[in-house]
Image 1 (cartoon, rainbow, N blue to C red):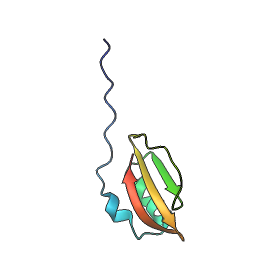
Image 2 (spheres, rainbow, N blue to C red):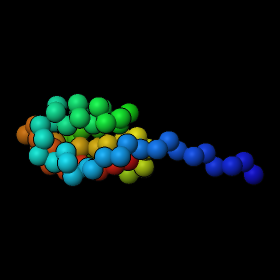
Image 3 (tube, one colour):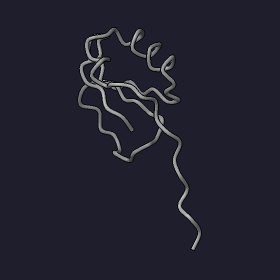
Length: 71
């Protein structure tokens, strides 16, 4: 059996620090902290819940991040 691949390490970052930031500022901060994928979604968007290493997700309402989670 082939060994399981080891996913790359995620940036050491606190998702709660993004809540309350303007979406543009949050995206700049996320990219500067090493996130390879930044996803901004409006509230209530239907999404798949697969975990993607290196991705940070923002729920954005009226241009402000209201929720943030990894993967």
